[in-house]
Image (cartoon, rainbow, N blue to C red; front, top):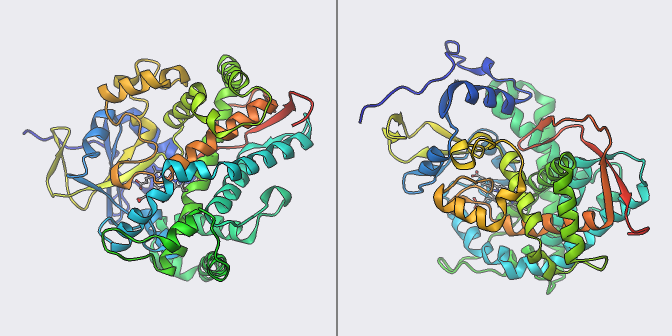
Length: 463
Ligand code: HEM
């Protein structure tokens, strides 16, 4: 086929396109470049070529796992310093990925996740109680409280550990260490290694944070071994599970890698989703009323139960639409398996080049979503429309990644998010603290709304 060069900003000799990105808000720069160049553009950095693909058609093409595979580079590669070949950061061919994947898939299956409902409910109710105590005039820092919720839920459901984050202004040392470890992993991925080496204080703190993470997880593991429990949590699954393929069990080190991985992978992604969902709801009062009515019709004022979760199609649509327009992981990355791979029938891409599935753009492709593709309209994500579109435009919605390397925690995140939305809409009327607030992004490894405050007004006199 006739091939054509991939467009992109020219950049500088050696340094490439480093200065074409605003390092404090890369997503913004990448969106601007996508608007300028269209379906694909290339950015070059020292030692790395990155092709950003921005349409449903190109994303669909690279979701073919026979031709393309996930790569662990950049910040993800640095995170391996703390969690090694844990599920998220392993290369597919590393044996521990296969063992953990096969052992853990059933533990993230529908039955196991449903069994976690009571504990998810407990943490969600604690949040409702906290907000009720705040009263109607106190501004709530939305992303922070949702992060407390997601971390506490994960730690409780995965290893029966209580951070009790709502009761402290200061976060638990494990949480602080994890946040700093993630930030610095991102920092290291942007600096030449030599620069990191001379930043001795930062580097010492980095390794010390990793030590805190591992020692905490190790202590929880040790205590579980000393006091065996019949809890059906992820820790039990990892301790007892035998890989059907190799007959192997997870090593202690691998259990620790994965416990920390769940907390890392599951907290900001889910809290970002909930925060964006509330932002969008507050900007669209009709959608807000419809969501609240759905909860009132299905649950009423009584206790929310697991059976209700399947009966909230509009709230599901809200979550899907939120992850479409505001994907908390705005890109994932693959390599072609062969050199000289032809993409889109005309672009040549080599094995050592990164292809970024730029979800923030491909998920608002007008080909799949029409002229109002960038508007937040949950109705288009109701089951029937969602399934029809997935048949017509496969891989148009990929916020949980792809194929074998897709998100193992998706059922966990979904049940938790539905439940939290239902508990909060049932008990409160929310208002934007600053009615003129418009969406700003805070970007770390994930994106979430920046400086977004709301207030919570109790509906029924008590929660
Ligand atoms: C993988 C998104 C919640 C655990 C992924 C990937 C994405 C993603 C995009 C693929 C990454 C890649 O291709 O490099 C999300 C979103 C979530 C969420 C948007 C919430 C709304 C969770 C939760 C957990 C979790 C709650 C844990 C309980 C993982 C793990 C992987 C993964 C372990 C790696 C799977 C593998 O490669 O075997 N997630 N995630 N995630 N996620 Fe999630």
